[in-house]
Length: 485
Image (cartoon, rainbow, N blue to C red; front, top):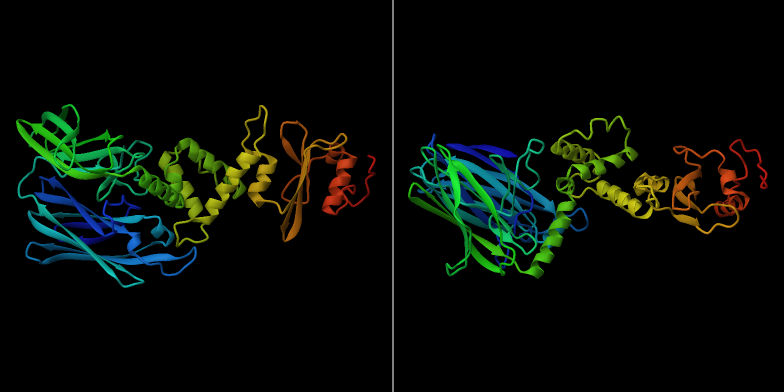
Protein backbone atom coordinates (compact mmCIF):
# COMPACT_ATOMS: atom_id res chain seq x y z
CA UNK A 1 0.00 0.00 0.00
CA UNK A 2 1.32 3.43 -0.94
CA UNK A 3 0.47 6.42 1.26
CA UNK A 4 1.02 10.17 1.05
CA UNK A 5 -0.30 13.13 3.03
CA UNK A 6 -3.10 15.17 1.58
CA UNK A 7 -4.79 18.28 2.93
CA UNK A 8 -7.63 17.41 5.31
CA UNK A 9 -7.09 13.68 4.89
CA UNK A 10 -5.06 10.74 3.67
CA UNK A 11 -4.65 9.42 0.16
CA UNK A 12 -4.09 5.67 0.08
CA UNK A 13 -3.27 3.88 -3.15
CA UNK A 14 -3.15 0.13 -3.53
CA UNK A 15 -3.33 -2.48 -6.24
CA UNK A 16 -6.50 -4.52 -5.99
CA UNK A 17 -6.15 -6.98 -8.85
CA UNK A 18 -8.11 -7.20 -12.11
CA UNK A 19 -11.24 -5.05 -12.05
CA UNK A 20 -14.57 -5.57 -13.75
CA UNK A 21 -14.38 -4.34 -17.31
CA UNK A 22 -16.53 -1.45 -18.42
CA UNK A 23 -19.13 -1.66 -21.15
CA UNK A 24 -17.39 0.69 -23.61
CA UNK A 25 -16.41 -0.75 -26.99
CA UNK A 26 -12.87 0.68 -26.80
CA UNK A 27 -10.73 0.41 -23.66
CA UNK A 28 -10.18 3.59 -21.65
CA UNK A 29 -8.99 4.59 -18.21
CA UNK A 30 -12.06 4.90 -16.00
CA UNK A 31 -12.40 6.81 -12.71
CA UNK A 32 -15.29 6.44 -10.28
CA UNK A 33 -15.78 8.07 -6.86
CA UNK A 34 -18.11 7.11 -3.99
CA UNK A 35 -18.92 9.46 -1.11
CA UNK A 36 -19.51 8.68 2.57
CA UNK A 37 -20.14 11.22 5.35
CA UNK A 38 -18.67 11.66 8.84
CA UNK A 39 -20.74 14.01 10.97
CA UNK A 40 -18.15 14.36 13.75
CA UNK A 41 -15.67 16.03 11.39
CA UNK A 42 -18.21 17.38 8.85
CA UNK A 43 -16.07 15.79 6.17
CA UNK A 44 -16.90 13.71 3.14
CA UNK A 45 -14.90 10.53 2.80
CA UNK A 46 -14.23 9.70 -0.83
CA UNK A 47 -13.25 6.31 -2.15
CA UNK A 48 -12.23 6.48 -5.81
CA UNK A 49 -11.42 3.61 -8.16
CA UNK A 50 -9.12 3.98 -11.17
CA UNK A 51 -9.45 1.17 -13.74
CA UNK A 52 -6.40 0.72 -16.00
CA UNK A 53 -7.14 -1.67 -18.93
CA UNK A 54 -4.02 -3.56 -19.95
CA UNK A 55 -5.15 -3.34 -23.58
CA UNK A 56 -3.92 0.28 -23.57
CA UNK A 57 -0.33 -0.76 -22.88
CA UNK A 58 2.48 -2.25 -24.95
CA UNK A 59 4.79 -5.03 -23.81
CA UNK A 60 8.40 -4.20 -22.98
CA UNK A 61 9.64 -7.43 -24.60
CA UNK A 62 8.45 -10.76 -25.94
CA UNK A 63 8.33 -14.18 -24.36
CA UNK A 64 7.07 -15.46 -21.00
CA UNK A 65 8.89 -12.75 -19.02
CA UNK A 66 7.45 -9.82 -21.01
CA UNK A 67 6.07 -7.02 -18.84
CA UNK A 68 3.60 -4.17 -19.11
CA UNK A 69 4.93 -1.08 -17.34
CA UNK A 70 3.19 2.21 -16.77
CA UNK A 71 3.07 5.25 -14.52
CA UNK A 72 0.02 6.71 -12.75
CA UNK A 73 -0.36 10.35 -11.69
CA UNK A 74 -3.38 11.46 -9.66
CA UNK A 75 -4.12 15.11 -9.03
CA UNK A 76 -6.77 16.48 -6.67
CA UNK A 77 -7.88 20.08 -7.30
CA UNK A 78 -10.56 22.30 -5.79
CA UNK A 79 -13.28 24.26 -7.61
CA UNK A 80 -10.88 27.10 -8.38
CA UNK A 81 -8.41 24.72 -10.01
CA UNK A 82 -5.99 24.98 -7.09
CA UNK A 83 -4.02 21.78 -6.65
CA UNK A 84 -4.51 20.22 -3.23
CA UNK A 85 -2.21 17.31 -3.73
CA UNK A 86 -0.61 15.08 -6.32
CA UNK A 87 0.56 11.48 -6.10
CA UNK A 88 2.46 9.30 -8.56
CA UNK A 89 3.50 5.66 -8.63
CA UNK A 90 4.59 2.99 -11.14
CA UNK A 91 2.62 -0.09 -12.13
CA UNK A 92 3.42 -3.29 -13.96
CA UNK A 93 1.83 -6.57 -15.00
CA UNK A 94 2.49 -9.66 -17.08
CA UNK A 95 2.20 -8.96 -20.80
CA UNK A 96 -0.02 -11.98 -21.46
CA UNK A 97 -2.80 -10.37 -19.39
CA UNK A 98 -3.18 -7.77 -22.14
CA UNK A 99 -4.66 -10.29 -24.57
CA UNK A 100 -6.98 -11.65 -21.88
CA UNK A 101 -8.80 -8.32 -21.50
CA UNK A 102 -7.70 -7.86 -17.89
CA UNK A 103 -7.28 -4.57 -16.09
CA UNK A 104 -5.97 -3.28 -12.78
CA UNK A 105 -7.93 -1.34 -10.20
CA UNK A 106 -6.14 1.32 -8.19
CA UNK A 107 -7.94 2.54 -5.05
CA UNK A 108 -7.76 6.05 -3.57
CA UNK A 109 -9.17 7.13 -0.20
CA UNK A 110 -9.29 10.76 0.99
CA UNK A 111 -11.39 13.10 3.14
CA UNK A 112 -12.34 16.67 2.21
CA UNK A 113 -14.46 19.48 3.74
CA UNK A 114 -17.53 20.91 1.94
CA UNK A 115 -16.81 22.02 -1.61
CA UNK A 116 -16.37 20.83 -5.19
CA UNK A 117 -13.32 18.89 -6.32
CA UNK A 118 -11.89 17.13 -9.34
CA UNK A 119 -9.89 13.90 -9.36
CA UNK A 120 -7.76 13.79 -12.53
CA UNK A 121 -5.75 10.73 -13.55
CA UNK A 122 -2.99 10.33 -16.14
CA UNK A 123 -1.75 6.85 -17.04
CA UNK A 124 1.43 6.79 -19.17
CA UNK A 125 2.63 3.69 -20.98
CA UNK A 126 6.35 3.31 -20.30
CA UNK A 127 7.03 1.65 -23.69
CA UNK A 128 5.11 3.79 -26.18
CA UNK A 129 5.06 6.96 -24.11
CA UNK A 130 1.33 7.40 -24.79
CA UNK A 131 -0.76 8.97 -22.05
CA UNK A 132 -4.39 8.28 -21.20
CA UNK A 133 -6.42 10.75 -19.16
CA UNK A 134 -9.63 10.59 -17.20
CA UNK A 135 -11.28 12.54 -14.39
CA UNK A 136 -14.33 12.69 -12.21
CA UNK A 137 -15.94 15.52 -10.23
CA UNK A 138 -16.77 15.15 -6.55
CA UNK A 139 -19.01 17.42 -4.48
CA UNK A 140 -18.43 17.13 -0.74
CA UNK A 141 -21.61 17.61 1.28
CA UNK A 142 -22.10 20.92 3.07
CA UNK A 143 -24.59 19.37 5.51
CA UNK A 144 -25.32 15.85 6.68
CA UNK A 145 -27.00 13.80 3.91
CA UNK A 146 -29.58 11.11 4.56
CA UNK A 147 -27.52 8.49 2.72
CA UNK A 148 -24.14 7.91 1.14
CA UNK A 149 -23.64 7.07 -2.50
CA UNK A 150 -24.74 3.59 -3.58
CA UNK A 151 -21.87 1.17 -4.17
CA UNK A 152 -22.51 -1.86 -6.37
CA UNK A 153 -20.24 -4.89 -6.33
CA UNK A 154 -19.98 -8.29 -8.01
CA UNK A 155 -19.14 -9.89 -4.65
CA UNK A 156 -19.45 -9.15 -0.93
CA UNK A 157 -18.91 -11.31 2.13
CA UNK A 158 -18.91 -10.90 5.89
CA UNK A 159 -15.63 -10.98 7.80
CA UNK A 160 -15.69 -13.89 10.22
CA UNK A 161 -13.66 -14.77 13.27
CA UNK A 162 -11.35 -16.95 11.17
CA UNK A 163 -11.24 -14.83 8.01
CA UNK A 164 -10.84 -11.13 8.73
CA UNK A 165 -8.31 -10.08 6.08
CA UNK A 166 -9.32 -8.92 2.57
CA UNK A 167 -8.43 -11.35 -0.17
CA UNK A 168 -6.80 -10.39 -3.44
CA UNK A 169 -9.02 -7.79 -5.14
CA UNK A 170 -11.09 -6.94 -2.03
CA UNK A 171 -11.49 -3.90 0.22
CA UNK A 172 -13.01 -3.79 3.67
CA UNK A 173 -15.91 -1.60 4.75
CA UNK A 174 -16.84 -2.26 8.37
CA UNK A 175 -17.39 -5.99 8.74
CA UNK A 176 -17.88 -6.51 4.99
CA UNK A 177 -15.33 -7.51 2.36
CA UNK A 178 -16.20 -5.86 -0.95
CA UNK A 179 -14.90 -6.57 -4.45
CA UNK A 180 -14.87 -3.08 -6.00
CA UNK A 181 -15.56 -2.07 -9.60
CA UNK A 182 -15.84 1.22 -11.46
CA UNK A 183 -19.00 -0.13 -13.11
CA UNK A 184 -20.84 -3.29 -12.10
CA UNK A 185 -20.79 -5.81 -14.92
CA UNK A 186 -22.92 -8.91 -14.39
CA UNK A 187 -22.89 -12.05 -16.48
CA UNK A 188 -25.20 -15.07 -16.85
CA UNK A 189 -22.80 -17.04 -14.61
CA UNK A 190 -22.19 -14.19 -12.10
CA UNK A 191 -25.64 -12.68 -11.92
CA UNK A 192 -25.84 -11.45 -8.32
CA UNK A 193 -25.71 -7.69 -7.76
CA UNK A 194 -24.45 -6.78 -4.28
CA UNK A 195 -25.18 -3.32 -2.92
CA UNK A 196 -23.98 -1.24 0.01
CA UNK A 197 -24.69 2.26 1.28
CA UNK A 198 -24.74 4.11 4.57
CA UNK A 199 -27.93 5.67 5.96
CA UNK A 200 -27.51 8.61 8.36
CA UNK A 201 -29.74 9.78 11.21
CA UNK A 202 -29.16 12.06 14.21
CA UNK A 203 -31.10 9.68 16.47
CA UNK A 204 -31.92 6.00 16.22
CA UNK A 205 -34.88 5.38 13.95
CA UNK A 206 -36.46 2.75 11.70
CA UNK A 207 -37.82 2.86 8.20
CA UNK A 208 -38.19 0.85 4.99
CA UNK A 209 -36.03 0.11 1.98
CA UNK A 210 -37.03 -0.87 -1.58
CA UNK A 211 -34.59 -2.17 -4.23
CA UNK A 212 -35.44 -1.88 -7.92
CA UNK A 213 -33.87 -2.44 -11.33
CA UNK A 214 -34.98 -0.12 -14.13
CA UNK A 215 -34.36 -0.10 -17.87
CA UNK A 216 -32.98 2.90 -19.77
CA UNK A 217 -36.52 4.29 -20.19
CA UNK A 218 -37.09 4.26 -16.42
CA UNK A 219 -39.45 1.27 -16.42
CA UNK A 220 -39.20 -0.91 -13.31
CA UNK A 221 -38.26 -4.48 -14.27
CA UNK A 222 -37.46 -5.91 -10.83
CA UNK A 223 -38.72 -4.61 -7.51
CA UNK A 224 -38.30 -5.98 -3.99
CA UNK A 225 -40.91 -5.78 -1.27
CA UNK A 226 -40.37 -2.99 1.29
CA UNK A 227 -37.86 -4.20 3.86
CA UNK A 228 -37.78 -2.83 7.40
CA UNK A 229 -34.44 -1.29 8.33
CA UNK A 230 -33.02 -0.07 11.63
CA UNK A 231 -30.74 2.97 11.62
CA UNK A 232 -28.55 3.66 14.64
CA UNK A 233 -27.80 7.14 15.91
CA UNK A 234 -25.17 8.56 13.58
CA UNK A 235 -25.80 6.02 10.84
CA UNK A 236 -25.82 2.39 9.76
CA UNK A 237 -24.57 0.34 6.84
CA UNK A 238 -27.33 -1.12 4.66
CA UNK A 239 -26.41 -3.93 2.30
CA UNK A 240 -27.82 -6.88 0.44
CA UNK A 241 -27.92 -8.74 -2.83
CA UNK A 242 -30.27 -9.26 -5.76
CA UNK A 243 -29.99 -12.17 -8.17
CA UNK A 244 -30.64 -10.90 -11.70
CA UNK A 245 -30.34 -14.24 -13.51
CA UNK A 246 -32.39 -14.11 -16.72
CA UNK A 247 -32.03 -10.36 -17.19
CA UNK A 248 -31.36 -9.73 -20.92
CA UNK A 249 -28.03 -8.26 -22.00
CA UNK A 250 -27.99 -4.45 -21.77
CA UNK A 251 -27.65 -1.42 -19.48
CA UNK A 252 -29.82 -0.88 -16.40
CA UNK A 253 -30.21 1.39 -13.37
CA UNK A 254 -30.05 -0.11 -9.90
CA UNK A 255 -32.06 1.88 -7.34
CA UNK A 256 -32.18 1.73 -3.54
CA UNK A 257 -34.87 3.91 -1.93
CA UNK A 258 -34.94 4.51 1.84
CA UNK A 259 -37.83 6.10 3.73
CA UNK A 260 -37.27 7.19 7.34
CA UNK A 261 -39.56 9.51 9.35
CA UNK A 262 -41.45 10.46 6.20
CA UNK A 263 -38.23 11.44 4.40
CA UNK A 264 -37.50 9.49 1.21
CA UNK A 265 -33.99 9.23 -0.19
CA UNK A 266 -33.05 7.36 -3.39
CA UNK A 267 -29.60 6.39 -4.62
CA UNK A 268 -28.94 4.84 -8.04
CA UNK A 269 -26.06 3.40 -10.00
CA UNK A 270 -25.57 1.83 -13.42
CA UNK A 271 -25.00 -1.83 -14.14
CA UNK A 272 -24.44 -3.86 -17.30
CA UNK A 273 -25.58 -7.41 -18.05
CA UNK A 274 -23.23 -9.07 -20.55
CA UNK A 275 -24.30 -11.54 -23.19
CA UNK A 276 -23.58 -15.25 -22.89
CA UNK A 277 -20.80 -15.65 -25.49
CA UNK A 278 -18.83 -12.70 -24.15
CA UNK A 279 -19.31 -14.07 -20.64
CA UNK A 280 -17.74 -17.40 -21.52
CA UNK A 281 -14.70 -15.73 -23.08
CA UNK A 282 -14.10 -13.38 -20.17
CA UNK A 283 -14.79 -15.99 -17.50
CA UNK A 284 -12.21 -18.33 -18.98
CA UNK A 285 -9.62 -15.54 -19.18
CA UNK A 286 -10.41 -14.31 -15.65
CA UNK A 287 -10.06 -17.73 -14.04
CA UNK A 288 -6.84 -18.46 -15.91
CA UNK A 289 -5.27 -15.13 -14.89
CA UNK A 290 -6.40 -15.43 -11.27
CA UNK A 291 -5.15 -18.98 -10.82
CA UNK A 292 -1.64 -18.06 -11.93
CA UNK A 293 -0.97 -15.93 -8.86
CA UNK A 294 -0.24 -17.54 -5.49
CA UNK A 295 -2.89 -15.32 -3.85
CA UNK A 296 -5.48 -16.23 -6.46
CA UNK A 297 -4.65 -19.94 -6.41
CA UNK A 298 -5.10 -20.29 -2.64
CA UNK A 299 -7.59 -17.41 -2.21
CA UNK A 300 -10.65 -19.40 -3.31
CA UNK A 301 -9.84 -22.55 -1.29
CA UNK A 302 -11.75 -23.55 1.82
CA UNK A 303 -10.09 -25.00 4.93
CA UNK A 304 -10.22 -28.61 3.73
CA UNK A 305 -8.74 -27.71 0.34
CA UNK A 306 -5.93 -25.73 1.99
CA UNK A 307 -5.11 -28.74 4.18
CA UNK A 308 -4.98 -30.92 1.05
CA UNK A 309 -2.66 -28.40 -0.62
CA UNK A 310 -0.32 -28.42 2.39
CA UNK A 311 -0.09 -32.20 2.89
CA UNK A 312 2.15 -32.98 -0.13
CA UNK A 313 4.69 -30.31 0.85
CA UNK A 314 6.48 -33.01 2.87
CA UNK A 315 8.08 -33.96 -0.47
CA UNK A 316 9.72 -30.53 -0.66
CA UNK A 317 10.87 -29.84 2.89
CA UNK A 318 11.20 -31.44 6.32
CA UNK A 319 8.22 -32.09 8.55
CA UNK A 320 9.78 -29.71 11.11
CA UNK A 321 9.49 -26.84 8.64
CA UNK A 322 5.80 -27.62 8.24
CA UNK A 323 5.18 -27.88 11.97
CA UNK A 324 3.56 -24.45 12.20
CA UNK A 325 0.84 -25.53 9.75
CA UNK A 326 -1.86 -27.47 11.52
CA UNK A 327 -5.57 -28.11 11.14
CA UNK A 328 -6.44 -25.64 13.92
CA UNK A 329 -5.04 -22.55 12.17
CA UNK A 330 -7.51 -19.95 10.93
CA UNK A 331 -8.50 -19.92 7.28
CA UNK A 332 -6.45 -16.79 6.63
CA UNK A 333 -3.40 -18.12 8.49
CA UNK A 334 -3.42 -21.25 6.35
CA UNK A 335 -3.65 -19.18 3.16
CA UNK A 336 -0.83 -16.89 4.22
CA UNK A 337 1.41 -19.82 5.14
CA UNK A 338 0.97 -21.42 1.71
CA UNK A 339 1.38 -18.11 -0.12
CA UNK A 340 4.64 -17.36 1.71
CA UNK A 341 5.87 -20.94 1.28
CA UNK A 342 5.54 -20.73 -2.51
CA UNK A 343 6.68 -17.14 -2.84
CA UNK A 344 9.99 -18.21 -1.27
CA UNK A 345 10.32 -20.83 -4.04
CA UNK A 346 9.20 -18.63 -6.95
CA UNK A 347 11.88 -18.78 -9.69
CA UNK A 348 10.58 -15.53 -11.23
CA UNK A 349 9.36 -13.30 -8.36
CA UNK A 350 8.95 -10.31 -10.69
CA UNK A 351 6.00 -11.98 -12.43
CA UNK A 352 2.58 -13.06 -11.19
CA UNK A 353 3.06 -16.65 -12.34
CA UNK A 354 4.82 -19.03 -9.96
CA UNK A 355 6.13 -21.80 -12.19
CA UNK A 356 7.31 -23.97 -9.28
CA UNK A 357 3.90 -24.03 -7.62
CA UNK A 358 2.10 -24.68 -10.89
CA UNK A 359 4.41 -27.57 -11.81
CA UNK A 360 4.20 -29.14 -8.34
CA UNK A 361 0.41 -29.18 -8.13
CA UNK A 362 0.15 -30.33 -11.75
CA UNK A 363 2.27 -33.32 -10.72
CA UNK A 364 0.05 -33.91 -7.68
CA UNK A 365 -3.09 -33.79 -9.85
CA UNK A 366 -1.60 -36.22 -12.37
CA UNK A 367 -0.47 -38.59 -9.62
CA UNK A 368 -3.98 -38.54 -8.14
CA UNK A 369 -5.51 -39.40 -11.50
CA UNK A 370 -3.07 -42.12 -12.54
CA UNK A 371 -1.81 -43.76 -9.37
CA UNK A 372 -4.69 -43.91 -6.91
CA UNK A 373 -5.07 -47.45 -5.63
CA UNK A 374 -8.22 -49.28 -6.60
CA UNK A 375 -10.32 -51.43 -4.31
CA UNK A 376 -11.08 -50.46 -0.72
CA UNK A 377 -8.06 -48.19 -0.32
CA UNK A 378 -8.78 -44.45 -0.20
CA UNK A 379 -5.11 -43.47 -0.46
CA UNK A 380 -4.74 -40.55 -2.89
CA UNK A 381 -2.39 -41.12 -5.81
CA UNK A 382 0.34 -38.78 -4.56
CA UNK A 383 0.71 -40.84 -1.36
CA UNK A 384 1.34 -44.12 -3.19
CA UNK A 385 4.86 -45.28 -3.99
CA UNK A 386 4.47 -44.57 -7.70
CA UNK A 387 2.84 -41.23 -6.99
CA UNK A 388 5.62 -40.20 -4.62
CA UNK A 389 8.33 -40.98 -7.18
CA UNK A 390 6.34 -39.23 -9.92
CA UNK A 391 5.95 -36.04 -7.85
CA UNK A 392 9.65 -36.03 -6.91
CA UNK A 393 11.08 -36.77 -10.37
CA UNK A 394 8.29 -36.22 -12.90
CA UNK A 395 7.65 -38.38 -15.94
CA UNK A 396 10.24 -41.16 -16.39
CA UNK A 397 12.21 -41.20 -19.63
CA UNK A 398 11.30 -44.89 -20.10
CA UNK A 399 8.84 -47.37 -18.60
CA UNK A 400 8.66 -51.15 -18.64
CA UNK A 401 5.04 -52.16 -18.04
CA UNK A 402 4.29 -55.81 -17.33
CA UNK A 403 0.67 -55.81 -16.19
CA UNK A 404 0.20 -59.36 -17.49
CA UNK A 405 3.34 -60.85 -16.04
CA UNK A 406 4.24 -64.45 -16.84
CA UNK A 407 4.90 -67.21 -14.36
CA UNK A 408 4.32 -66.49 -10.70
CA UNK A 409 5.42 -62.85 -10.90
CA UNK A 410 2.91 -60.19 -9.85
CA UNK A 411 2.23 -57.29 -12.29
CA UNK A 412 5.26 -54.98 -12.23
CA UNK A 413 6.54 -51.71 -13.65
CA UNK A 414 10.06 -50.34 -14.00
CA UNK A 415 10.74 -46.60 -14.34
CA UNK A 416 14.02 -45.17 -15.59
CA UNK A 417 15.27 -41.59 -14.98
CA UNK A 418 18.40 -39.67 -15.91
CA UNK A 419 19.30 -37.37 -12.99
CA UNK A 420 23.05 -36.94 -13.37
CA UNK A 421 23.26 -40.67 -12.90
CA UNK A 422 20.67 -43.16 -14.06
CA UNK A 423 17.96 -43.98 -11.53
CA UNK A 424 15.56 -46.89 -11.69
CA UNK A 425 12.50 -47.85 -9.65
CA UNK A 426 10.84 -51.26 -9.67
CA UNK A 427 7.21 -51.50 -8.51
CA UNK A 428 5.05 -54.61 -8.10
CA UNK A 429 1.32 -55.08 -7.48
CA UNK A 430 0.81 -57.99 -5.09
CA UNK A 431 -2.84 -57.05 -4.43
CA UNK A 432 -4.20 -57.31 -7.96
CA UNK A 433 -6.02 -53.98 -7.42
CA UNK A 434 -3.35 -51.51 -8.50
CA UNK A 435 -1.58 -51.38 -5.14
CA UNK A 436 1.92 -51.08 -6.58
CA UNK A 437 4.71 -50.97 -3.97
CA UNK A 438 8.32 -50.04 -4.46
CA UNK A 439 10.39 -53.22 -4.59
CA UNK A 440 13.88 -52.07 -5.56
CA UNK A 441 15.74 -48.93 -6.58
CA UNK A 442 19.24 -47.47 -6.74
CA UNK A 443 17.97 -44.18 -5.31
CA UNK A 444 19.72 -43.82 -1.96
CA UNK A 445 16.85 -41.67 -0.65
CA UNK A 446 14.43 -44.60 -0.98
CA UNK A 447 14.26 -47.96 0.80
CA UNK A 448 14.20 -51.31 -0.99
CA UNK A 449 11.80 -54.02 0.13
CA UNK A 450 13.61 -56.98 1.75
CA UNK A 451 13.17 -60.19 -0.23
CA UNK A 452 12.04 -58.41 -3.38
CA UNK A 453 13.81 -61.02 -5.56
CA UNK A 454 11.65 -63.79 -4.12
CA UNK A 455 8.54 -61.64 -4.63
CA UNK A 456 9.32 -60.95 -8.29
CA UNK A 457 10.71 -64.37 -9.18
CA UNK A 458 13.37 -65.57 -11.60
CA UNK A 459 11.63 -64.74 -14.90
CA UNK A 460 10.73 -61.18 -13.87
CA UNK A 461 14.26 -60.53 -12.59
CA UNK A 462 15.71 -61.72 -15.91
CA UNK A 463 13.28 -59.51 -17.84
CA UNK A 464 14.07 -56.43 -15.75
CA UNK A 465 17.82 -57.11 -15.80
CA UNK A 466 17.85 -57.25 -19.60
CA UNK A 467 15.77 -54.05 -19.86
CA UNK A 468 17.92 -52.10 -17.41
CA UNK A 469 21.21 -53.58 -18.56
CA UNK A 470 22.22 -54.55 -15.02
CA UNK A 471 22.43 -57.78 -13.05
CA UNK A 472 19.67 -57.92 -10.45
CA UNK A 473 20.83 -61.40 -9.44
CA UNK A 474 23.74 -59.82 -7.55
CA UNK A 475 23.06 -58.72 -4.01
CA UNK A 476 24.18 -55.39 -2.61
CA UNK A 477 27.57 -56.79 -1.64
CA UNK A 478 28.24 -57.79 -5.26
CA UNK A 479 28.00 -61.53 -4.60
CA UNK A 480 26.07 -63.58 -7.07
CA UNK A 481 22.56 -64.84 -6.36
CA UNK A 482 21.36 -67.96 -8.13
CA UNK A 483 18.81 -67.22 -10.87
CA UNK A 484 16.95 -70.32 -9.64
CA UNK A 485 16.55 -69.00 -6.14
